[in-house]
Image 1 (tube, rainbow, N blue to C red):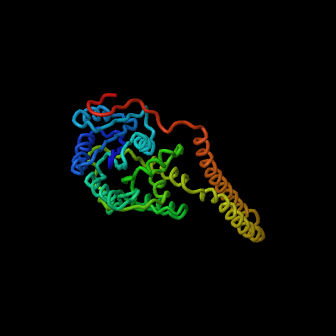
Image 2 (cartoon, one colour):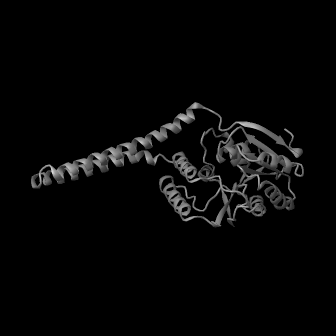
Image 3 (cartoon, rainbow, N blue to C red):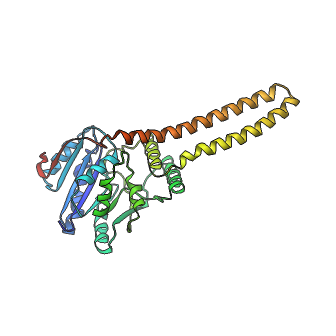
Length: 313
């Protein structure tokens, strides 16, 4: 259908947000007077998110629900939504209403009038974030920019992408995709709008510090092999340090036999061992990604779904 818009929203443990979310999206999209579908993916929620979706569908025939058999992660949920999308373009956004639905209209108009394949919503302000989280994101985006050339500072998954981009993403067979980075990597014409991150409407974020670290490692390794070169760097650095410490050890051995030399040699051994283990860990992480890709398992498994009003499968 010409100009049809798909709105794709991953959700995990968002029972308290579903009614407000569906209402806000409908209020933002219906004034555009274009056909649309609202696809919400329940990513293995442990609360009443799925029942809330079924209840919301009674008053929203455009709502389609997909429920994973278990938690597969946000990237998998976005992949499932893109596979199910039938629109000429799709907006991906979060379920906690930190991404303001009112921005959808501006993104859609820019797509129709500007000929962009991607309309990215950039964060004007990041809202309330802890010092640790801000520091972590700054370090992560800095590392990603230096290693891969992708500048994702203040970027988010809140984007509008047209059918060209959707088809490329759907054709990808990556087991651990990185949506944000992949869209940037494509290089299609991109328009940008700005938004202010809001406070969560209800509930708590599903991202824990451990999940953030795993997400960062997966994202970096998906777009650059630079960390593998660290092993060579560590090897050269440890060789240089060992040479320097050996010279110091020999000098100290003549001044204070057995005392200074023993301590320095212990430091050399610990340094070399640590660098070797770090290098092996980096190599092992990349091998684990290759192993996951070669197994050929599906990114996600769908437990149940419904299409249209009344939550009927």
